[in-house]
Image 1 (cartoon, rainbow, N blue to C red):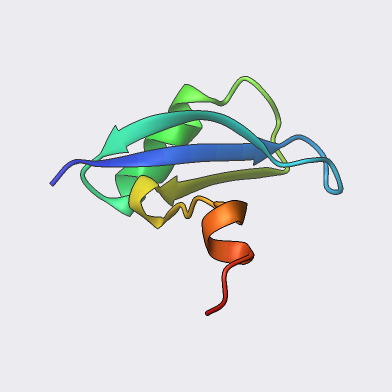
Image 2: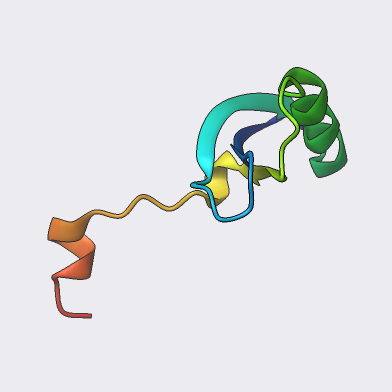
Length: 68
């Protein structure tokens, strides 16, 4: 099953982590490989992939300020 992954990176430890793109892959292992091959133009301190379905949107008005 093909999944969508968001790709994040930072150049130096202590720098901001940036969203730099996305990849599609059939497994987490392949997603890491695709991200490395696609975004290897920098000497990243961190390169990470996150399954798109695991990214949680923060809606301040509806979730954070509402009682549980």
